[in-house]
Length: 117
Length: 115
Image (cartoon, rainbow over all chains, first blue to last red; front, top):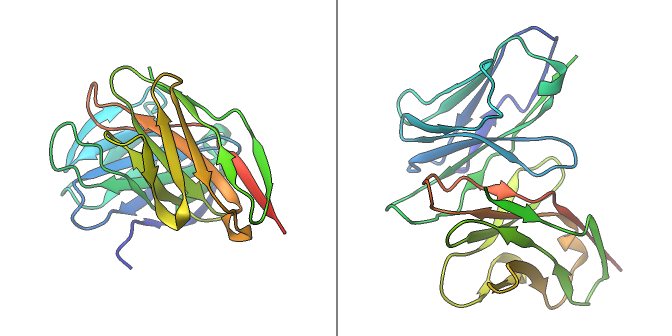
């Protein structure tokens, strides 16, 4: 399967603990996005990478959140000192953008469901 | 700022009947519009997009969508619904002003197709 993969699929953690999620995009895709989805809502943009450069971060992304894409391939999203409000589905997506001004569809992974107790 | 409104939380339709899922948007500059479908415990699947050109775009599984610039709408349609179309549908918009193509999603519309 050459789609976007995410690990783990589910994570239960206690408040105050740190968690890290991994996303493996489609191999030739140069852009990688993170979104967060809570129950009854559409996904909300968190951040995105063009190759290894993090180009934009949403105001939703507090200082407790950090994302990396060290070699322009997989990405990690870390949440430090988790809070109950962090409970959500974290979605990763990737796309191949060949030129400025193009709008290529994003392909989503299955998500990581985080539950903070 | 860009935004999407999906005014119906749920749409019910009988199998074989046409379906419409509504979406309106607000964005600076030219809109890039998308529809995604989400099945339980699965990620979002891309259905179709409008970038430029014909206002009627065709996508996967027999779905199509009509872009209406004057009404800022991008309604999803299918001539004949199937029970297997029952799922959660999201409309999304992006704009290239500022770059990134980040998507702004609506709150979703639950489609229920009944026999």
